[in-house]
Length: 372
Image 1 (cartoon, rainbow, N blue to C red):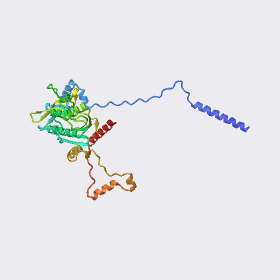
Image 2: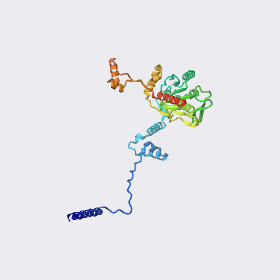
Image 3: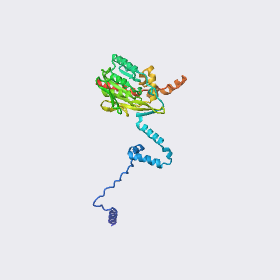
């Protein structure tokens, strides 16, 4: 009997537990409501800039805004006609950027100093030419170097325009471009919109060099140098390495003000074939490479005595490696101690030209590709 009683008790307990669980479980509804998706938080619209707000004003808004300022501003004396004219002219200078420059006095020429013309053969087959100020003596030096390159079987050319400051001499600039562009092709045009004039410069001679060309540019590549770079890039599919050019491929006219100040105004702009503008955005590099201007100037100065190769090859320095660890030595520390024993600090690292280095790497890569 005890066994039966025990079995009966277990059955009762199981039944009671099932009833409790059934009572606690909510009945399922016929349709399942979708899980609510939290709505995305609306993003605040960007605050418009002052320039964008001013640009959105029409002539009626502008006229009314000036009048409201005159009649309501706390210090109306600061909004006399002279101050308003100054503010207007200052705004014009800011908006036109490179197109207008106010000078305190006449200047003899470009404020930037050009590095002298320089030529060299790198790796026994790559011609390097730094074109300098783009004047007649530099053109003669260019012809001499191109003749030398032809005799020595140079098959790639690097044209460095990073030391060619702005100049208005587009006629001479076209002579530089003719050395690399096909005969009979328009190089660029000098367009003067207000005077309704346009002068087109066309190559009237066979090029002195035909082959792979790499162009080096940066923010110091200005004026006529930009027109040369644009024409050579167009006809030779030359790649530009470095940084964007200055966007000043214009002809300036210096106009004297009653006070003696000079208003330098862009009155003409160089335009590539098919109307491709160079002003005000300049030329963008195909391969962007940064290099500090101070280091570039140091490289150009030292290269007159050392050549360019020392500045495209990294100097090997002692460093800690696996062999040194096994032998219990530290080459870096030993080099520093040796320098101190010679009563001088560690040697200063040689400046490096990463722009030219990238150009040489590219020439090498193209050469390998062509062989295969």
